[in-house]
Amino acid sequence: MNEKIDYKITLLGDSTVGKTSIFRKLFNFAFRDGVLSTVGVDSKTINFEDVEVNSNGNNEKKCFQITIYDTSGQERFRSIPRNYIRGSDGIILIYDITNKQSFENIKTWSDSISEIISNNNKDKYLVMLLGNKLDLANNSEDNDDKDNENNENKVCREVFTEEGEKICQKYNFDWGGECSAKDFTTQQFKDLIQNFAKRIYLTVDKSDNSRISVTKQNNLNKKKKICC
Ligand code: GDP
Image 1 (tube, rainbow, N blue to C red):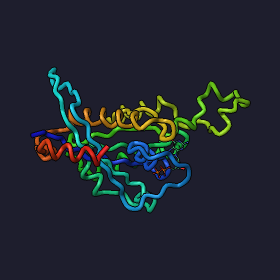
Image 2: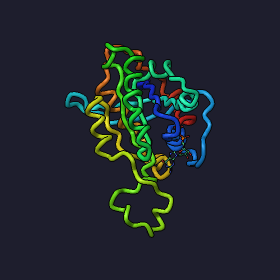
Image 3: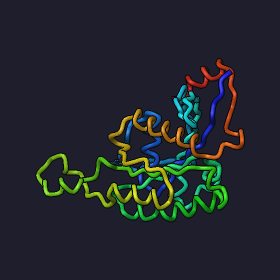
Image 4: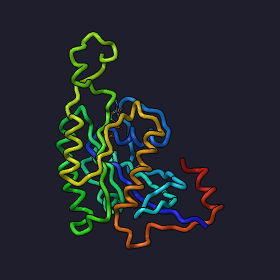
């Protein structure tokens, strides 16, 4: 018998910040330029086994089964995926570091999340902030280097790293750092999700057992084949 902890993680953020691209890279699909269509909400499951977690000074090994929801299709039609937000243990809130507006809208997203999950349930979920499109950003020291071929397709970053860190303190988010759905590897995104699952385990109120499922070893092995 094997005990798994089930978490639901939802990707949120303005349209075109790269939610679908991150989702695709996490599940090992190639990066694509251009508008990527998500019809409805896409979801996929990823398993992490024997993950070391240090809880109250004790090292424990845990198995996580994480279902990731990509809500891209929804916000393009100006609809907030309330049901997915409400059922989430973790939310990855994404902005585009080359688009200031997508960063400024983090406040609106934060307000919506608190309102939907409910005011007195703050200990039931965790939010991680992620700045995407790092590959596109010219850092300020490169800006004078107009002849550099590598900079040809780059645009100036509109949000500095420190601004991302600072807003996390303000809203009590975890800082996931900056990433690139284009340049990051699948493993880098898997590591990010695994670390977030550990943080959820250590932070989110575990007083109910609804997230724990017990599976026979055989079933778990079967599942591993279809999941990542
Ligand atoms: P969504 O609406 O948030 O799901 O955003 P998409 O994943 O559909 O991406 C919108 C556009 O941004 C597409 O043209 C993607 O190819 C592009 N894009 C997404 N992530 C990155 C990234 O990390 N780097 C670059 N250069 N482009 C990206």
